[in-house]
Image (cartoon, rainbow, N blue to C red; front, side, top):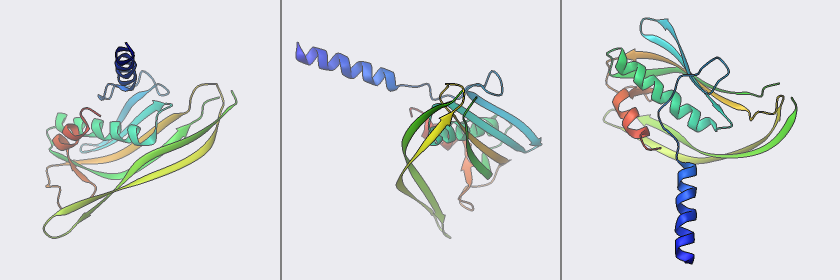
Amino acid sequence: MKTLIAAGISALALAACATDPTPRPAANAYAEGYTERTLSADRYLVEYRMEGGDYQRAMELALWRAAQITLQHGYVSFEVVNRDTATDLGARATTSFTTQHAMSYQRSCGLVSCTTTATPVTWGGVEVNADGRRPSRIASLEIVLGNDAVAGSPNRYMASEVIRNLQGR
């Protein structure tokens, strides 16, 4: 009986953690999801807003959407020329204390190959929220589409690899 209860609790916990990894369009400028803007024929601004989420997840979903845009326009790679994160706190005062854990990735490319180093990062903060909603995390990427190989730049990504690597997260 105890084993059955433990299995049930584990299944519920896993189901609660499961999220749809596919980015979805935002219904409006303040809703969760992605927005995108064409800056030129091969340059886009992609933003992903998550209510109460973390910056790393918002950035992953922005990268995923950037990869989708790249493939939709017939390109194979994209370069991130600018990235930023922000918090939208809203409008009725509440206070929350947060601690976030993430991985920081450093990519170094030499003449023959590239290496990626992952380092755990932890930070905390106090947030004042103005309307009772959880703060929104916003990840912004300015990208340039291309058909270049990835090896030359640590900020250039193969679109199909980004989508494959982020599936199931």
